Image 1 (cartoon, rainbow, N blue to C red):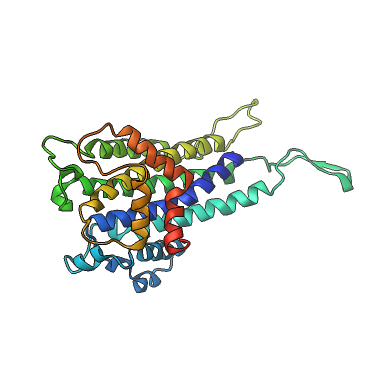
Image 2 (cartoon, rainbow, N blue to C red; image 1 turned 180 degrees about the vertical axis):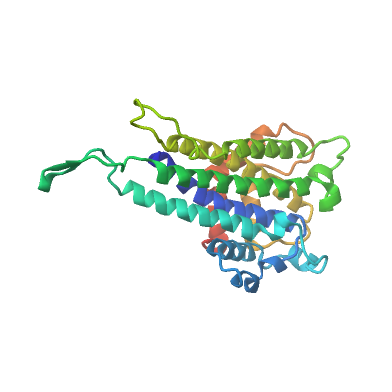
Length: 308
């Protein structure tokens, strides 16, 4: 379970950055206002992850002509936009806890019995018990599922013309074309699956070995589920990058922030603007491949410097 956890945490830390990028793209596409990302707000609630995400979003949208034009259009945006630092940030803090737990675990001795050669002593103990990892990987699953949950909510706004001010389902001739409707369906299905997968394994136990092993962690299940949740979340974030890039193209006369431009251009390198209905699965797969390789994050960091 430790090995699965290490694989998961390394991928999730990059996905968390990509989620910030996707959120910034959606904020620009939806003509969001920047007030919720003001540094002064986040200094008053000093959760580290929240501050990191707010700073990322400020840097991503910095210099945006879109944000500047529409900044006086409303006082505040919906939660899925203005609370991105609080939600993404809570996931960041959870991932920090998971990383610390894994670092301790992979540098520990978990055999049983433990042989202390110098003292010629063998001690039977419980260092093998997986509870620390089971709890951490359950927390991981819940935290990563939330990145996908809020991403899907932003996608729902993007495809809803009554909320976005954009063409219905982000496509021209929407009565004839369904555009990104099915893409949002896909995200909705994936986040719903994650809600089931995020049920904690660590609250379960079943005795074995004639009740000698009468409490077990179920940590391996927790780690396996965490990887499944991560895979689903990658797909959801990829779909947000795809839909937000499409939405941003409807404001093409105004220049977005340098960070969002880099992300948009990275997506457009593999998927063109959707003029009419196409089979979406290959398009989603192409963007998901970018996410898996960390290509979107690298493109943005080359443009504006390292993200938090």
